[in-house]
Image 1: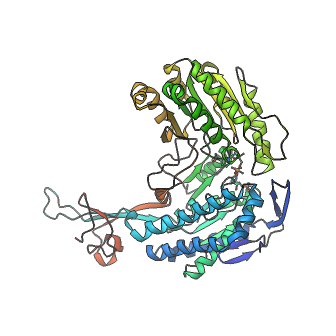
Image 2 (image 1 turned 180 degrees about the vertical axis):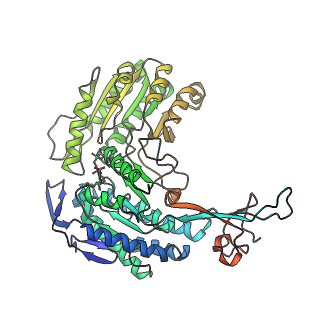
Image 3 (image 1 turned 30 degrees about the vertical axis):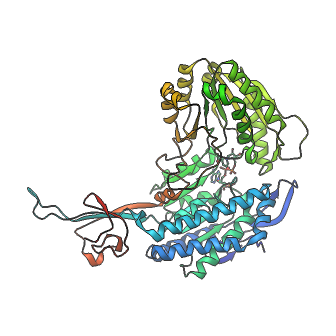
Length: 527
Ligand code: NAP
């Protein structure tokens, strides 16, 4: 069923001579599927189609777009086991994870469908005219959100479903009214092609314009760069490495017309273990954190890579238990030999830094591409003066920092780069007592967790998945949850515009029955 071709709108296209294969990390051999990289003319064709599609797609009602999203979800489900097996083959991830991630992806599509059916997300705001206002009459002003145009989405290696072809970026952009061109991730191009087939079929079944979605293959930088530089592309979504995200961000800013790049580039997700957590539940937390570090072979953007405590016997016990516990867990397969290679290099580079001591290092033989977990410890002074220790090692590796006192802990937290999440383990009394520590952590993160683990990202409207740079390029936005739609829209105001020519969301009669802000009051009433 896998053809190795690009989807340019609803047509398969394989004009290029440059091909690549995907890799099965469990079997440690190529999958046997060959993919044709998109050529310049195929990229241009996809963008042209997307631009034409935009003229129609932006006018399609929320209810019809919702039907499109729900049909994509159905078509993904209809792919059944073939899709799950392709995912497993190309990622090395286990079946439970594949099924869970497919469920999350379907859930995300349906959540955006629901948002569109309800309709109030466009933030319709109306300030009625006041002809009698003195000294000057007030004009009639109305504002709402509109889609920006075709967007380019870069699939993530570590989420072949939920952050890739029909993942949160694509679902939110299609919901906003933007055609999507996916730059498929080369590590799971087969999974991407099957999902692209499902999206294309759903577009046909629901009468969406040709070109509302395209899927391009590539195993090098050129295709992505050409997409980002194309004048008809109006925004970019990316999840991956800092180097990749920044290369695309810079490129987008150097265009004659710069465009936003919403790049999520990783995080070490600092965890602060306060004294009460160590004294009362230190052993439990150590066990939970050993499991959290190991989850998905540590290949989560929310993996806890840094753990801080104030030096004490109970911190020593916590470190000892975490070390013993994590050493008993079985290593997992990583996504690709390259990712495994980067992990091994990154882990060793950090382990040889000054003052670093090993807490746990899984030394037994493992199969190729399996990640051997490692936990190290360092004191606050050494950590503070060595920024290498602040960097993410993508995999099951964590650094535990023994701080001298709460003042050193706050100083260290303030010195960290921006993060997706920050966690406090402790009591409510300690949130008061260690207010400076909490404030320091809050200033560096997008999501604050109390007495939990950062792995596991709830998909809901209140989720913030995006933090200060370099966790993401714009901390005002999220890539998870319904608010992710805000990345692909811009507000337009209408001044003294005649009723007949206003969008339905802004008409006096409120034909869509949505919640609006009318003269500073939230209401669904007509005017
Ligand atoms: P990546 O190397 O950043 O690649 C992600 C996507 O961006 C790929 O489609 C890649 O395309 C493209 N890309 C990368 N650099 C580019 C450039 N200079 N110009 C144009 N396109 C570019 O990330 P990855 O392959 O997913 O994984 C590599 C490393 O990234 C991991 O080892 C890990 O350290 C990190 N990572 C972090 C997270 C996180 O959530 N924190 C998630 C995934 C990966 P091509 O490969 O076709 O060039």
